Length: 162
Image 1 (tube, rainbow, N blue to C red):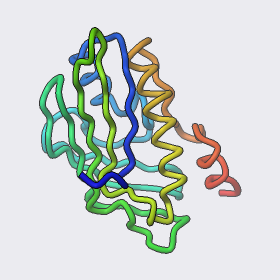
Image 2 (spheres, one colour):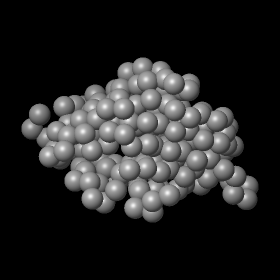
Image 3 (tube, rainbow, N blue to C red):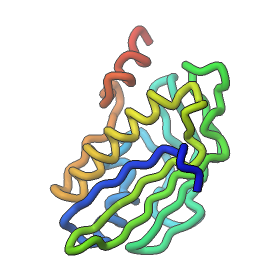
Image 4 (cartoon, rainbow, N blue to C red):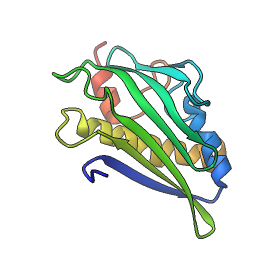
C-alpha cells in the first residue's frame, strides 16, 4: 500500500457490526445531500456540496463487520485546476477488533499530497471520520453537512459567496 494515501484511524467501544452499520448510513455522518442507496454491494450514490464538490461513488466491496470499499466513479471540484482529482480513487473502511474496542481504519487510496485538493480533503475527511462518524457510532448522532450547513472551515470558505 502506498503510504502517501490519506489514512486516519478511530477506536470505538461499539461492536464491529455497529460500526459497519453506521458507516453505511452515509447521510448520518457525511452529508444529508446524498442521493441513492448507500448500504449494499454495487449500490451507486451521488454526493454533492453546493456547486463546490460532487462525486459519484459505487460500493465495490462490503463484508459485514469487516470492510467496505467505495470506488469514486466520477468527481468534480470547482476549486482545483484538475476537476476530477478523486476519479478512480478508492475509499476504504477496514473494521477490526483491537482489545475490547472496534477500530475503523479509513483510507482514501489515491488521495495523495500531490493533489491540489489534498489539504482541504484531508481536513474534511479527518473531521467527518474522527468527529462525525465516531459520534454516530458512539452516540447514534453524527454531524453531517446538510443543505446550507457546511461542517468544516474549508467548506465554509469554499461555499462563501455562492
